[in-house]
Image (cartoon, rainbow, N blue to C red; front, side, top):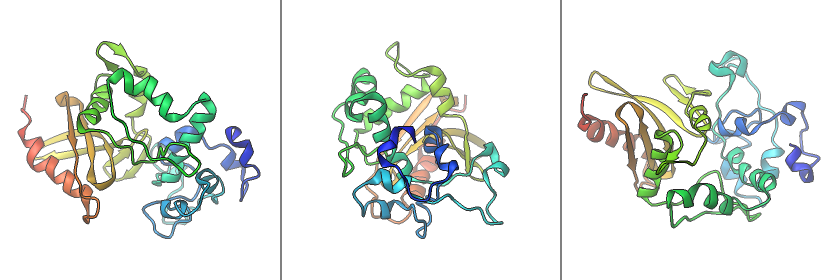
Length: 254
């Protein structure tokens, strides 16, 4: 909140909103009522796209309620209540701009994309002009692979420590439980898959239309699946089927 003094006062002020952290946004577990998996949610991303100020949209949301059938954070694994919220991740862009004094595009280009030789990069932007950090970044498949490989190698690329190893390790640790058997890190989906009698641990990026980057640390492997299933029902299960029926069975047993 200290980065957004120009947005004060926010609607529905609450001291719990004042304590929201970047980690809450990265783990989809902030206290505001924002759930893209629920079409009735006040914070649903489709409602955000209808207005001009996406930052205020998030900051003005009500505090989330926990009815008897929904355990509060203290009673959930890792002490967080997962709720997929694009509006929260979109807030990261203006926050980064205020913290660094430069655009997200320039910052990312210098500290991440240029060291990895990633180009071209196509960003979508918010009505405010800030980058859209809640999705819709367009990269080539080979460049998506570089991001997965960067994390697989503990933040190193071509012998250079591009990201701190401690950040990488923390990013792929479970911080919230999505559902039984699926956890969430810092915008990473942590999900094991079973192929025959073999259980394969993965952490993955998941994009619109079923586009995914899977990192398989036990096999020292990165799998990139890019698709065009943007208007196809169930695109994510289709991608998972490709992974489990074609790719994972082809990996060596030893």
